[in-house]
Amino acid sequence: MRRSPRPFIPQRRRVFLGCEGESERGYGARLGELLQLTGLAVHLDTVLLRPGGGDPLALVELAVQRIRDLESKRGPYAIHAVLLDANGIGQMLRDARMTSIATAARVS
Image (tube, rainbow, N blue to C red; front, side, top):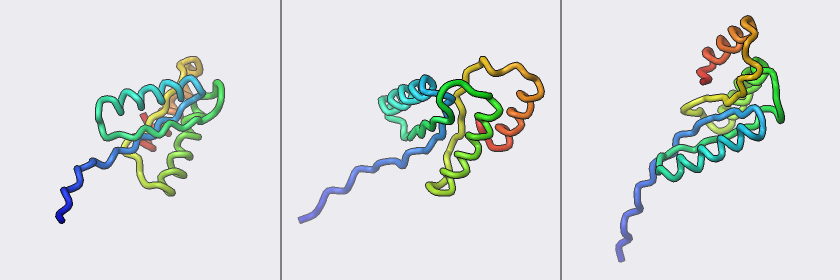
């Protein structure tokens, strides 16, 4: 008896989404649900960087470290992103350093 061929299931692209706190992680979870409903082959890996508010520069540095750790264990992400509140932005030197670190690590 012949088996019918298995349906093609595309491999999902892994996306790292570093989240400042629980509310951002909630937004990320909802975004993941919406992506699933669209049928896109994407896995959104929402990672809580620090509960509550935080310094944007420190959060981006932590995100870069978490990306390196997770990629060494599970393979590369297709996209790196961090979801932050805008309330910590506005210190020109720290913002410039944060942007430089994010750009070097391909973090949006």
